[in-house]
Length: 167
Image 1: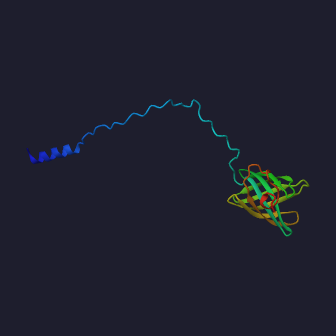
Image 2: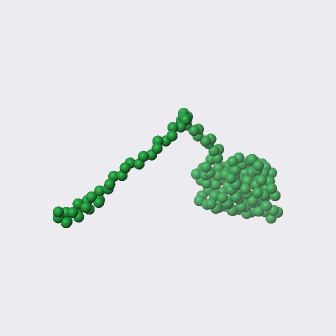
Image 3: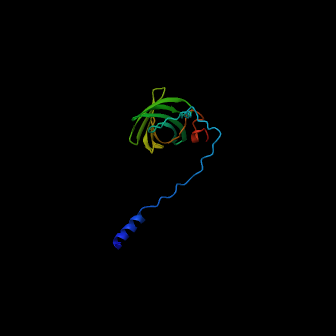
């Protein structure tokens, strides 16, 4: 036999894998009876919280006057760049508000029953903080506001430091 032919023959036989015997596994043990559910699992209840849009939500406002700080609240709904909602004063009275958002700039006008208005002009920072000026009939004072997530804005809400009536 030619030595080259022998090397090729040996190499070919080495490249062909030798079949291994099939492994045998024991059959699974028969279980009593397996019940398959006939109904799909019910869907979880829908959360009542609606995804926040822009600066929508409850805001605690601190109005800094020379006589002290006054705590009030906005409940704002934003649609596109238009704001609507309610203003809760330090006495718990509600007044309608409207306004606009332009980038970070915010303008909120509160309509008072006597025909007057409170005009808040400022800027928001990351939709959680606001700072600006409140224009009164004869004065202008600074204000800050902080977003306060709440499901129902009047639950446990009263004007005061911390938004919960705590001084």
